[in-house]
Amino acid sequence: MGKRLTLYIVIAMIAGILTGYALNRAYPADSPTLVAIADTLKLLPDVFLHLIKMIIAPLILATLVTGIASMGDSAALGRIGGRALAWFITASLISITLGLVLVNLFQPGVGLQFTATAPVEALATGDFTLRHFVLEVFPVSALDAMAKNNVLQILVFSLFAGVALAAIGEEGAPLLRGAEALATLMLTITDYVMRFAPFAVFGALASVIATRGVGIIVTYGVFVGEFYLGLLLLWVLLLGMGGIFLGKRIFLLARYIREPLLLAFSTASSESALPKLFEQLDRFGVPRRISGFVLPLGYSFNLDGSMMYTSFATLFIAQAYGIQLSAGQQVAMLLTLMITSKGIAGVPRASLVVIAATLTQFGLPVEGIALLLGVDTFLDMGRTATNVVGNAVATTVITKWEGMLQPPMDPDASAPLPPFDTPEHGRRGLNLDPDQ
Image (tube, rainbow, N blue to C red):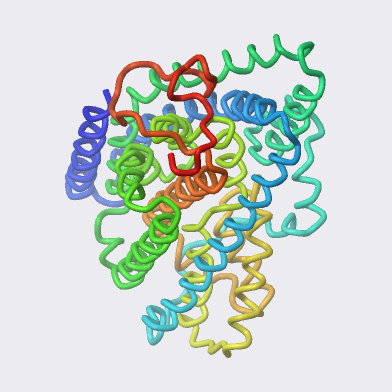
């Protein structure tokens, strides 16, 4: 199914762009018929994302609880968590700094003299405070956190549940087996849902191109092109950092994560890629006790593409309005983005919220966000795919760092995976040899 699904997704992307272009040429931009057709096409990705969101909470809960309980050692948990956060902070600093360096080098906003042409919807910057972030971390109810797919709160509850399961030993064995079975069930459901992915990709691209046209990319071509060049450089840096630990196997990782990347790019949703990313990292040789803990943590704290976008876009707006920022102000902006970006969990339109909060902090025109709205969907596709790359590299590096990386399986194998890395599953069992 693996190779065929990748081919079908690529075909769907091409067909979606061509269909959207044909519809855009056939109907006037303000045509009610065009709006109705685009809205119908958008049903396909909306249904797909609903199905993905249906899977996310139980999958994360099951993988986290089982992974943490399987460690059985709170010292190991703390060590892995500490290494993960150290990697996330380093990657975030590199991402934000790269965005600032490139926007200063390319200066895409200089001389453009843009004016706001689209109304800016209310962004949740009022909730963007230390108090809001701290309270957002801790769930009032585990069921409420799962209902809202709040990854950070699910992570906190699962941390307590996993450590407690390890502490009560044999009494918790039935619950642990239940969590393992739930994870296997969710991955099987994921397999079924992924068969609908090409239709979702087709609908998403056809709808966007039909209503906005390919001209929107041409209009902002310089900005979009330079941003994507920046993302490419960030990919090189992230994969290069991964290569220091993984050696030539980093190229194999790129092959394994191609399907999650395509899904993330075409749907502009990290959630759509998460279940498939779990599966592919299993095949790459990452024990679920590591990926089940590090990946959800990364989805809250390691959004490398989004980090680069916040610095790139904030300075682009300043340039477009002819506002010069000193080197000191830009360093202060980097540190501000570094801190505020860690509180975006649960905030709608997270990257735009971070940008709006930063613009306000530095006295820059918040209405400049209107300049980004027209192409934000296209930019979101690239930064979302980059987030997937960053989290895949982080998870595999930390696994290697811990000496737990296993030999790879065939990334396109159709045989079901064992639920978790236990000795009875042969070579998928935990191997502490750091050279594996």
